[in-house]
Length: 224
Image 1 (cartoon, rainbow, N blue to C red):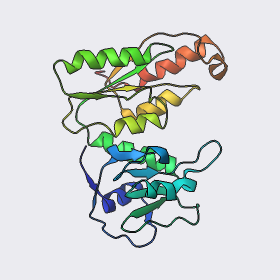
Image 2 (image 1 turned 30 degrees about the vertical axis):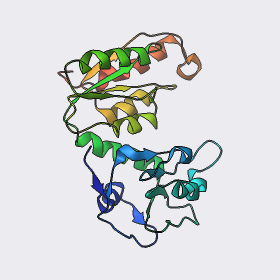
Image 3 (image 1 turned 135 degrees about the vertical axis):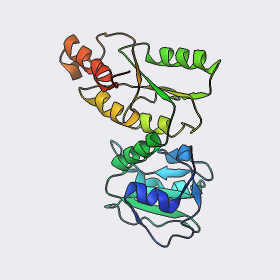
């Protein structure tokens, strides 16, 4: 994808700076976003998210020590200071900011987006589609099973502006989740592998699962 300046990223996220921004024109790449400080490599961006038990902001110092060049963190989190020659941006909600960045990435992507969902076989089907298309085209597929509200934007950050296609995997554990993921990815081709009995508790029964998977069909354009 295209490189951004820190100031451009700040504008996309409607964020404010923490401390003095050393070089607002420095180039950043969303493909280098990490949400686990242990995965950070030199030059990465650490996106500090609220976890089930702890907030990612607790690991900002660790991320800088591992070489993070910048951090995105919630405004309400205190005691976050950028390391020397690094930057930090504060946002209202870091999860929503992740979605905003994914929306920007989608606007910048001209390839065909293929979304795959189903009760089973999503990962295999996604890999098969990518393997077949890659024999003739340049494209990208979701890494591993990045198929939820965090994995989908991280997958989208791997898209390149010259890709002819992107295959994205969509999962859900409750009604409305696939619709929300489709709002980000905006697929023009949808693949439903099957309707099974996975996560019955979250959907109230097989009919609920079928309706949830059908959210992908409803999200397709008229020529999808």
